[in-house]
Image (cartoon, rainbow, N blue to C red; front, side):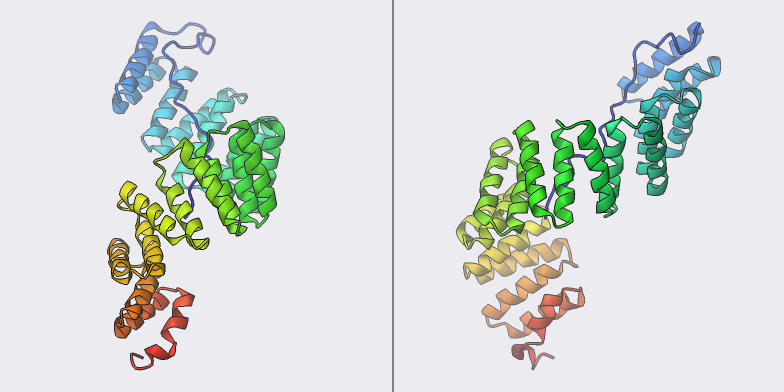
Length: 352
């Protein structure tokens, strides 16, 4: 399992709530509108979002074209999951000032969080036609395409984002991950290395590089990069998990076991950690311990086919053929094709 394929799901957009209103948006702001606006800011800072929305609305009743109040209300709507209301506010901002980059950014984010990917792409398309030199729109649209599995479209957008902002490590990382998903492993490695030259302190980039090297079967190169990741963040359970898998692939079973122990210690609810540790225990011929870890994994996720497969292997080595075959049948029924080969083997004839 991998994390940090993308540096961020969406371009990070802060809540730009302003303590002082921009006077050029409304030539002469009604004093009561100004007070309501400031009250909204204070309520937001106290995390009293209902009051903040109400006071921004009060300001707008007095000054209907108070752009900052609309923008801030829209952002609070977005923060509180009221996506339709947020969309209305950001569309209003665009009608007033079609040159507002942030309004398009927030509008796209509202549609994305609402789950309307088609409309999100449409907003990015509108924004790009209006602001063809704004890298963030290409980057954000690329991350959306990536999540949809549209890697060709994602790559085109990341290429454009890199062209406009060549010194951004996150964009290079995400383009590298796109190359990786497309099977272009050498290009992925090149992008990760370029990203690390720009920002050598990002553990997730080392993690992505390590996983790409592992995919290339360069297991010791992968371990080296996971080590680099852990130098920057020694509490990242995903990196320990991935390094454990590389040790497992390299035949270093004791080292793999130590890493999976650390995974389970850091994240006791991480189901993959138990199954991966069971795989290491099986290779170390500690079958009873492996069964216990598989039990733990299945207890946390009863549909985890690989855990049934591994438990079956451990049970077979403990001479529990019936239990092994039942586990392999369950794994096969859950869609794990490799389990079917175990179940149809000669040892399961009587069980079948």
